[in-house]
Image 1 (cartoon, rainbow, N blue to C red):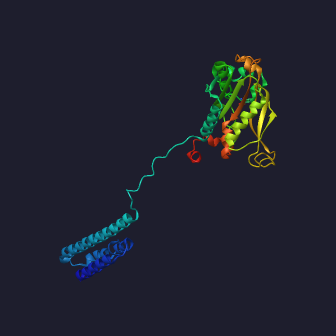
Image 2 (image 1 turned 30 degrees about the vertical axis):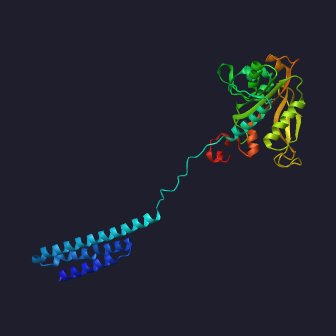
Amino acid sequence: MLETQLSHLESAALARIQGARSPEELEAVRIEVLGRKGSLTQAGKEMGKVPPEDRARIGKLLNAAKQALESAFESRQRQFDAQALEARLSAEWLDLTLPAPGPQMGHLHPITQIQSEIEDLFVSLGFAVLDGPEVETEYHNFDALNIPADHPARDMQDTFWLTGGNLLRTHTSPVQVRGMERLGPPLRMIAPGRAFRNENVDASHEHTFYQIEGMMVDRDVSVAHLIYFMKTLLTAIFKREVTVRLRPGYFPFVEPGFELDIQCLICGGPGCPVCKQSGWVELLPCGLVNPNVLRMSGIDPDQWNGFAFGLGLTRLAMMRYAIDDIRLLQSGDLRFLQQF
Ligand code: PHE
């Protein structure tokens, strides 16, 4: 009795295993047959009713049925696994013959680009490009520029003081002092480089920024020379004719000193938000070199005079590329740098 029941059960289960169309369906069948309440498990519980002399034989049949079904489940499962693998392999294939993306090329920082352009221009006008130390003496950064220790102008530049009276240069003007000392007149030079000030950093202030300061010392140098060179410079930088004006500005190392403004390049004069409705944008300080400064560097102010100017490279880069946060320039953020 149990024997026929067993063989029906086995053949019915085998048919369902073969007929299962998905791993989920197969699993459902497995639970129905071999699970704790499955049909084969239930049949095993009938063993108690089998007469003792038949038990060994029926028990063997039961085990054989169980093993046959388990291996049928396994091989059907393997078929499904193989199908799934096949499907993945055809969906996720990789063409190993495609060319690789290639190494990423670096390029010059936007400030370096502008610096090189301006250097080229001044070299073409007969200026030397001079370099100097970033750690400076108090003398070269201040005293030799007509800013003695008790002078209120020292407060115009918040200084990072180092030990031994040294400091991080607050502008590149000390390179001009070194240039005058070393080269003597006549002299045309520019001094590009980093300058440092103890600023609270925000969108428009940095403790480290780039400048190009320049100087020409010769006979009978006038404000007209200064304006000529500045106009030539600005036309080259902005790649168009610019209108400039001078306003009085105070710097101890120049006399007279000026703030040079350019007519707003956005609105061309009538006023807009960029120029705060004034039509003019303040661009660079400049002036005729103070005779005291010449004298201190060993140049006779009765024989020679000159002009000097300071150009904020960081500011220029921000103006040219409409960068609204100074901190981006030294962030090292490739998402920013890759745009230039
Ligand atoms: N050295 C001045 C500064 O950095 C700029 C300047 C240079 C002003 C030359 C006038 C003439 O603040």
